[in-house]
Length: 196
Ligand SMILES: Nc1ncnc2c1ncn2[C@@H]1O[C@H](COP(=O)(O)OP(=O)(O)OP(=O)(O)O)[C@@H](O)[C@H]1O
Ligand SMILES: O=C(O)C1=C[C@@H](O)[C@@H](O)[C@H](O)C1
Ligand SMILES: [Mg+2]
Image 1 (tube, protein in one colour):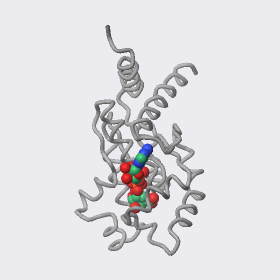
Image 2: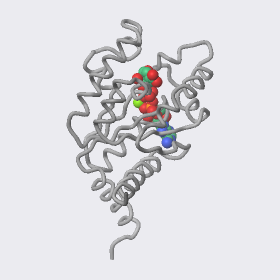
Image 3: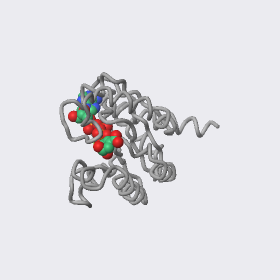
Image 4: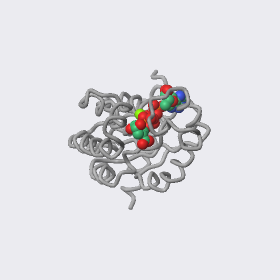
């Protein structure tokens, strides 16, 4: 007899894969929300390619994000990010994890809207802070009071992230559980759009 737990997990993947179709799944949200970590697992569950826009920017520019900010400033970084995200979303299905500011930029947001289904990984300040304070690879947090800066970014950006197609609460649980919640949200969204 088949293992019932295995069957549930398999059908979650299969149902989410069918619900996504040829669309891209694009993860948005603040630094530390888990877009890169969770996105990679979601892609592997769905059996489709995973791409992280920050990594792709670093690959094409042959510079780190920190170096790009220092050499060209945030505005140039955003322009490059918009071009890279547009290109990554040209074909699908893929899971694309974006940088924390990508969806906030109007041009990039337009590419994401056209390019597939967007998911906001929404987390509270303490969860985010716990995760981002371990590394200093985020130029926007190189301030006197990085936790306060993170809170200011939350206040400014959360109304914009809320425009994503789906919202999943990024809690302090294992990444695999978060990945399952993303898959469930994709299935639910498809059910709702089929019913309307
Ligand atoms: N659910 C989780 N449980 C435990 N650790 C997590 C979870 N989600 C993410 N992390 C860890 O938190 C850190 C930040 O996560 P990640 O790099 O995926 O965030 P991000 O949203 O991609 O941030 P950025 O916008 O800076 O790229 C990583 O070390 C990651 O392994
Ligand atoms: O939140 C942001 O604006 C950023 C987040 C990171 O993913 C990087 O894209 C960069 O550090 C900027
Ligand atoms: Mg990331």
